[in-house]
Image (cartoon, rainbow, N blue to C red; front, side):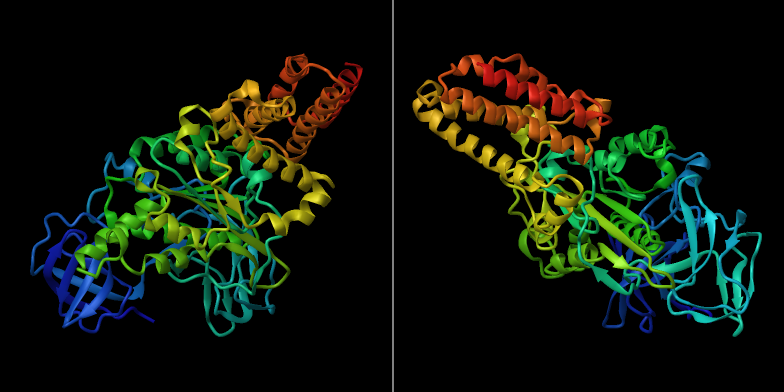
Length: 583
């Protein structure tokens, strides 16, 4: 079926929006080509005989009367092998190909296929002639990269009996198989970016998403398939948190969306990722990564599309049964693009000028996260874990984007400028943050980490809270007036803050911590506190306890590698108990 084509002409231009007449039969959210350069746009309003388009490229130089061509299909992305290792802009133009033309900037009207249709892939069928297939069924596999096997699936909504199927190599312009009714299932398939891909059922969050960062995994866990937001003012380390999780988080696929961020930050991503080694496979991290880039100087409308482009690609790999981490940096820049387009449309503004439907649009993005039972034969489960940075002006968490995001997020990792300025990474304010997933992960922690892991976490939170209370008392009466037991509590809290919650991504042993290491670090800290408390009751001077060389050993535990850590930490705990018992 061919796309219906409607032709009109430009009636007016206002920034990234264009009004066109003669498109009265055009459909909402369908793509257009605008002007002599054929700029890509999308219909976002139809009223009074005029169609309003948001144009995903620079509209400079457009004039009234230029032709506008409307198509009947929505804005889509092309899905298939070859996505991994690639870098796209918000409308899925391959930036490496554009760079190869010799330009550092994207020229208007450039048209590039997102995937190379001529490239041949070695296809291994898992179905045979005569097999009945339906949407989501795996037809065969392709080794996309050395660490990721690409499952070629029947598109949703298609079913029938296989008449022909490839058994050797296949390119993007050839069918993988042909059904008896003549339907061709090709290697590449298109999917509308604003339409969630279907699945059988959403599954409850039962396992944690492992970041390797102690404050997240232990204090503020996010479930596999959950959502977390990372709000913080300028310089608090939002991008560092996102990049650290991209590098060290335990996921099969990483989708990194640089939405409206500075070009130098994205340059760091593009140069670092190919050189980084996956800590699990030892292969380049880029082998399981797709990057979607829309820097602050790129067209604003494409920034609005970028997060939907990214999450559609994430859903595609989720449907193969992979666990996908989607990192959006920053959702505030996306909301600013939404606000600019809304103002051009002269819509009634909401709080701080954002459109009234801001929360609805955010929900349509966040709700596409989750752990699901995939469509198709077999019992595949896949997940998308969304972690998005939020950039509230002045670090004000009461602003609309942060508040709207909190309605959908299951975890809040609030970044604190005071901690950031003290070089405490991650600069997470544990008192202002929360995780709604921990109660659902209690059983997992008890079964896979330690029977008392949940109790240790509760003790850590109580210790940090007590430290805050004692610091308020100190401001009134001074530290010398505290009871010795409270002074010991302050010392244990300092060890927990500096030795456990603070973490360095530049230290190979400290950059990623297993749950086993995190558990035994907590055990050693509270062994110190308990043994010192008992010694204090027997009359041992507080100074002797807090100046013990064992304190330095506890602080240095984070510099020990994950391998064999439990044995070393257990030995340290035994020495602490023995030495303090002899005092």
